[in-house]
Length: 409
Image (tube, rainbow, N blue to C red):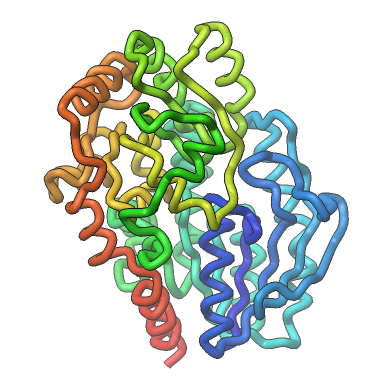
């Protein structure tokens, strides 16, 4: 098949959507498919264009068997609601001519990644005119996330935006997403259950596995073997509500054997560091994103992993960091309401993680105290088995190929 992927994020971004889009396209290319990508230069999660790239220029490159076209975009230094919209719209505008440049290549299918939904009109127009099959893969419901986090107001404008979203979604041949609750949301928007496809974010369980030695980071960061580590690793964004981690660290500051680590980058990083300084947290440290090949050792460092989200965001976004934690058999605390995807996951698979109420630092601190005092084993067999049964990379991507082939039959 000739497959065109159209989305703002792509490798070499180390976290989030770009990581998964890159792995997917490289796997497809390695398995005999012709793959092209229209994307932006890497910028996430630092919100800064990566070294060797220019956010104001077009660029073509060949990356691990995939032809990639990078399009200019505006990257705000301090993302806000307005600057994020300008950021997404800028890529949608500059990428339009590059998508239509693929006309004579005649792709069999275009996979449009949300975010950003601003790219959807271009993807659908190209597919309708070219006679190409179309797939919308939803990693994040932009509109739902904005409304859920209070960035938009209910009313005429919100209602109109939702109607436009539904109209465009119904135009795709396939609509996929990364969780069952997100697929139910898609069904409510499209009323076309026959088009839906469950396409979860995967994990390489051969690379990320239990039993890895964490000495690399204990030595690098001078962490004694007797110190218990509570780890948050990934994007430090507004929708996480990571302030409660700082407050929990403050509540546990008398525990000299406990260290909180926040590893990553994002729009909220500067604010979080300022708050930590104001709270005088000697038991919390910040570190930047680490090399991907060192990720197993980083995961092995943690006694407890944190998956933190605000209320209203848990079903709009399924955090990709969770699959990594499950693969290594990590013990995790998840903030999610009972009726969300994460809440239901914890109910169905008892012991997979500890699920607590979001946005409550006292509840988080109490949960951590109980887990630390119980001397819980670092290895969680329920979590590891779930990853082996449900998140293995090759079966997930193989099912994608089968679904695309079926749509063209």
